[in-house]
Image (cartoon, rainbow, N blue to C red; front, side):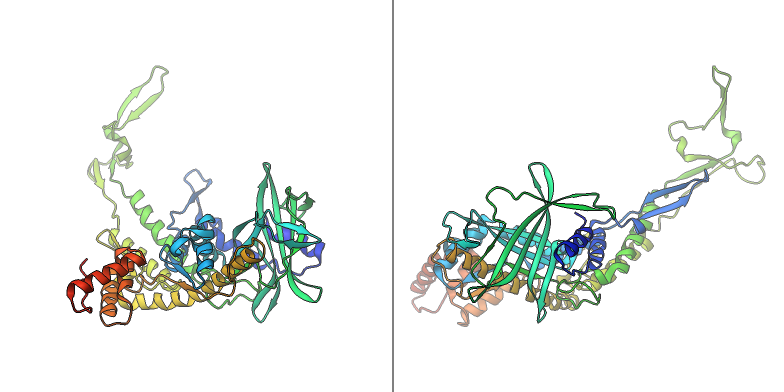
Length: 498
């Protein structure tokens, strides 16, 4: 899908005024994330034959690595959700609040959400988009549909077309994504717009499909096509609760375009990405060109004539003949008949250049100066550098703010749909808390010791310690605490053995 061409079509067909130019930046970030930016990574040089030859630069592909690392830090298997209402918690999270059960488990939410964080940090924005399959629609309005089921899409910035922005928040939006139906590639356009029906403001969701031709040219053509069987062309939800939530890396965008969209986390680190690849390419080229070479005189060549009368010359060592080169020397008094040349691999210089490039890059993407540290063949993490860890922690806390807001908005939309459309006895207004993983701040032993001291000092219930560090259920944890208290006879001693 060529989003800039599709935007031109939509602006003309629907009277929209979406700025397509910003999506060229998003496409550039995508290419750097893929590790293939032809204008930089393709090197051309004139060969000995006088022709221009091209080679691909050796590269480290650090933009993808940085986005992966941010996704791992911000949303991982240690991220949990707490829902105050028991029925809502069971429906959303599963029995006993298990994060892999309930609706989130059925949707494989956590792995998909983690992937979306990477895509958002690559493209500048990510979107959770809720939909309901099997929904009954009558008179253009969604009806309660107990047999329907929730679905989620996870879309990067190139699929997000903000339509209305108020007070810095996207209120109306269209999502364009490429889908395959019956072996045919189509563009799916889903539009979320606020309308007023019977004096009530509510969202109207419209579904459209298009086929495309000649998308890579200025003569791109788009034609509406039939909707999949059972999909409504449009319907009103009956609520102002949006069925989408957006988030971006929490960095202030300095590109004056793309309202409603954010900026890639490495947008300001492109020069540092180039430095990494230049340093690594030079390192690899020194190794590639660093094999031993033996220069020799033609006097050492073995001459023979083949059956066709053509004269040939062979190097003295046929097995390793790639090591021998003609020096063109016929004067035995000037130089030896042969001599070795062992190029300097410059390992230390190259290694230092690569490390410096990585330090600059990790600093620019907010991970701290020494996040990628190589020593004695082992990779050290930022947790070994107190100052750099603090820098990373500050950026992580900033990035968590929009992600938390997006998750809360999404979960409330799911609970609203569960109550009003699926007929589930849940409470959309219940208190919801997102608990982010903080292991990047301190290691597990430090956190375990801290929890032990907090339990002994009475800052947290003692059974919490057993649940967190021994994997017990709440009932098992409470029973263990009671048994320990009974054995001690004092009621205030607790065995914290590992």
